Amino acid sequence: MKNNLLLKGVEIELYAGTESGEVLPLSVKLKEKFPDFSQEPDQRNFEYITKPNRNYYELFKEIIETRINIRNYLKSLGNLTLIPGSTIALPFSKEFYFSKPGDPYSEIILDTYKTKVITTSIHINIGIDNYDDLFKCLCIVRLYTPLFLALSASSCFYDGMITGFKSYRWHNFPKAPSFVPFFTKHEDYITWINKQLEIKNMFNIRHLWTSIRPNGLDRPYDLNRIEIRICDFIMDTRKALSIVALIECIIQDYLVNKNWPKILQTDLNKLVTIFENQEELVAKDGLNAKIWNWKDDSEEKASSIIESLYKEYKKTAKDMNILEYLNPILEILKDDNEATQFMKMYNKTGSIEKTMQYFIEQFTIIDLTSANMIKVK
Image 1: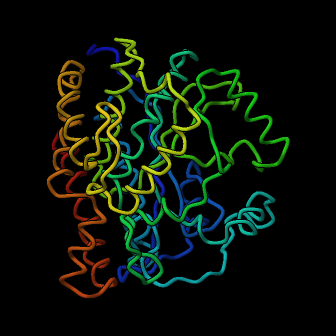
Image 2: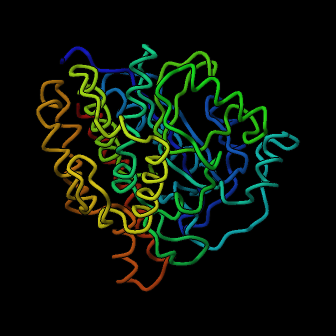
């Protein structure tokens, strides 16, 4: 299995602003400097996308080197920097700073959702060419999306408030359409998408905002990957890639063993509601959320289920020579997700602003340490 790693890539959304934690509308300037970057409707979040790659080290290297280039450019603008977290932590203007003034899609986003869409995240793309395998794996990975959110949650603050959530981003972000079924066949997906566009449940093909979806060059027809969209932004790229490695292990296990879960032979529409509820429980309580372990029909903490998954897939990762990239899962289980770390620091400082300033510094240190690792290697 060592030579059969799948193509994968990540879409990384970020905030940038002052060292005091104020998020600024900078995506137009960043797009001018880095033409390959993508722009969200509002200028306060921006995105860069890695090239498809099978090799985890090369993926790590591209993520970090791009981020260092961003940091150097931001510094030249007047000691600006990158800001962690998946929601804007400090009080912010509710004015919409259009990245593409006059763009109809952006106008619809503003009118419909206001500033709820100004979030950051990591979207994970895993390449699968065979349509039967793609839709089988889409269903299987959807059974695990609450766990990926539990590992990545980093949005406990919003607009100067403590939200009571570990991922306020996922709780608050609009899901569209309101009900997205499990797609088991390509033709079912095509029919459903075209129907949603026809009845205007979706503005366009991009307007499928759910935890996981098929993706490709010409959706819904030409597809080549699964996109996992549920993860909050994580500062530590090693930890982010451990979630990628876990997802790849789950997929590789199916591709090799064809072990179709029995649960997917039950009422799939009922499962949609169940797993959306699981995602909301995890958005609230993170790794401590008690959720349904469908493998043995028990209720367990998300952290316990993840620990069992790590043990289950440790050999798979070792066989594929990616165990070092899966192992940071254990660090997240030990240290908890970033939202919990933010709250622990807040309990010491009593200030969201001081907490964010501390983690802005930590984010810089983590990136520079990672860059030095690349130089040494």
